[in-house]
Length: 276
Image (cartoon, rainbow, N blue to C red; front, side, top):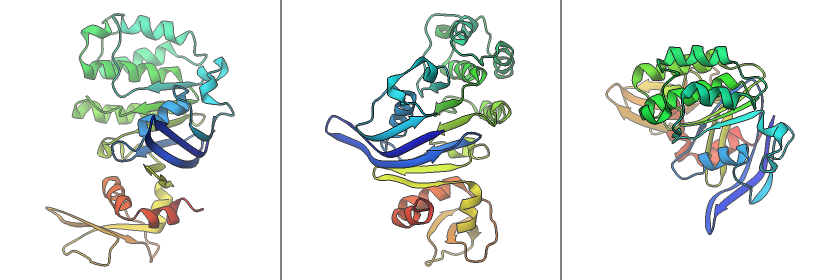
């Protein structure tokens, strides 16, 4: 569905990332993780056709995004992190936009909006930031595009709304759809996103399913720090510990710990998870 080969991008003299390579497949909800400034939002904008790659090749469903052909645009939707709607009713915006998307479902839109508790007759400018975020997520999920890109969708939502967001994404995703969610709030979405992508300025550190991660790494909480472990992170319960999985036993993956472990073991992670 998406092929990215040796893609690089800069803002003027500022290099954002270099030599990004990966293939992404439909029927998955990818979690895109990375430190601030590594280019997660930039990558989503490249995939949506808003930015042009500086070097390398990028195709989405066989099309070059930056050409923004109508056949491409009707199959992709991008939810930016800081969405601010204009002075228009939410339902009017959705129904007008839906005319450009062949799989748009008004019923799905109204159902999701109702679950979020947002009035369809309200104007975006009269809604709080969190309510606007819920409204645009309802639009995005109801369009049923082949590719859906979401940048920090849980930002601005309260705790009950974050739980609802997880359920609504899971319920409305289809096997024909590819979803990429860029997030810093891994705890908000860790039961939804799989596979996991971790990127830095030099490329991709990890692009693997939860199953592939548990095959190669084990996660545990230990009473003492293990100096031989790949990573240890202390909290009130003890030391969250990551080791190479030498026994084959599966353990639950803590995405926050995984992310921190990747940052201190970049070369190892690239070798384990990207040199396939």
